[in-house]
Amino acid sequence: MSSEDLRIKQLEQKLENKNKEIENLQDENKRLQETVSNLDTEAYKFKELVYSSRFLFAIFLGEDFIIDVANDSLKKVWGKGDDIIGKPLLELLPELKDQGIKELLENVYRTGEPYYADEVPIELIINGKPEIRYFDFTYQPQRNAQGEIIGVADIAADVTKQALLNKKIKKSEREFRKLVNFMPHKISLANAEGETIFYNQNWLDYVDKNLEDFIDEPWTDILHPDEKEKVEDVVAGCLSKGNNFDKEIRLRDRNGDYKWHICRATAVKNEEGEITSWISSSTEIQKLKDEEKRNEDFLKLISHELKTPVTSIKGYVQLLLSMLPKNNSDIDKKLIIKPYLNRIETQVERLIRLISEMLDMSRIEQNELELKKEEFNLNQHTEEIIEDLTYTNKDFQLELQHDFECDVFADKDRIGQVLINFITNAVKYSPDSNRVQIKIHEYDPETVAITVKDFGIGIKENEQKQIFKRFYRISGEKADTYAGFGIGLFLSNEIIERHNGKIIVKSEVGKGSEFTFTIPLNHKL
Ligand code: ADP
Image (cartoon, rainbow, N blue to C red; front, side, top):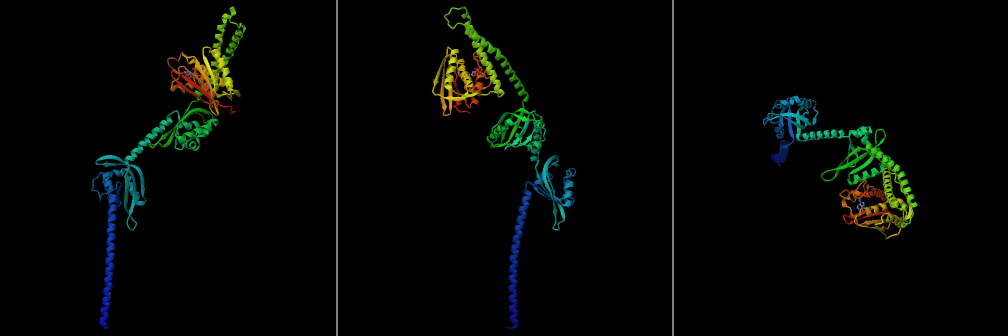
């Protein structure tokens, strides 16, 4: 190959290489163009985001804080129109100068340390009128490629609505606290789990503790040891079921003395019905309790004092009666006094029963009613009682039916007292009938029951529970017709409850009533 050919070959080779380089450069160029175009799109998107955002966004350049960027939301808040780019911020908004904003911006510009603020009130002159707006904002230093600070970026949110609402909430919370501290009651607030998160001043004064210390203690520590366990059980039940709590309990004060309180708690629920918290109020009733005790003691004293002379009157009447000849046919002058003595005896019996009921009642109030349990035959005891009652209620037909025979372990006199109360009521509240049916029957395999059925005036359904309350008597036109104090059923209920039994009432106005009491069969409890 000639040297000429060789050169041509080399030149061709070079040309081919150059072409390849050009091709590569073209590829590279295309890729760069794509990247630039992507970047443009990104920048556009970013710009769009900033400009259309509800957040307020601006960049201030230099120490005069020349507005370089400000999005539409910010322009709207400033209310100075669109033509603001290139203007110094504090010339555009001179009102900011007296509100510490200038100093804040200068500090960020000088130190490079960002500044964050929440719910700051700023007065702006918007469309010529001064207006207070609240802002959450951040001042961020802006740097160039060399890292030098060239300006400050302002990213803010107008939180005026939220801030005004928060102010209202804070105001109503302040008022609520004041109200709660002003009240004479002890008020507390607990979370859904029952952990106390607030006690009012009265609570803190009562225990002489500060809020932090008292909250850290379980509140049940100040309960009276006799009630603690029971109250804790009831509270646990309320918490799990969402029921209201309503109880009289004793709470220990700052001197270690226990004082009676009425304590109430109620659940606060959200819209879904879930419990969010508990509000409790405790009101001291120690003075009332003391008063009640004085009354009870007085009643007890009077009953005791009355019982002795009345019992001796009864004794003398019975003695006089026994001295009279038994035979009615004897024509004896002395006989004239017999019916009067009989009447005195009946009246004295009533008086004795009333005094005993009053005494029993004060015993119950003071938790002193004790049962003297023994084993006895219920059928025989019932028969004896009915025999006695038949003697004093001669016009009445007391029909006894033994469907079941059994022994019980119970307080014989007290069970008799309940039965007498049922039967005397049946007689008393049956003005147009003279039949009373008494039935002894099995209630369930463990329990015996005695039912006393009358055909008297009956009891309205809404009063059937009330009649067991102390001194409760059914009011109405006939109220004065029937003598009584409304103590008998209250006592009967207490006696039967203490025997772990219950009383059941069935009644229909105008048709009659059926009173049943149950007691466990010969269980030595
Ligand atoms: P008292 O009969 O002394 O008033 P109780 O406690 O024995 O007191 O009874 C309470 C009330 O229940 C009575 O006042 C009466 O209104 C009502 N009551 C009780 N038993 C009957 C009955 N068998 N029939 C109708 N009402 C009754």
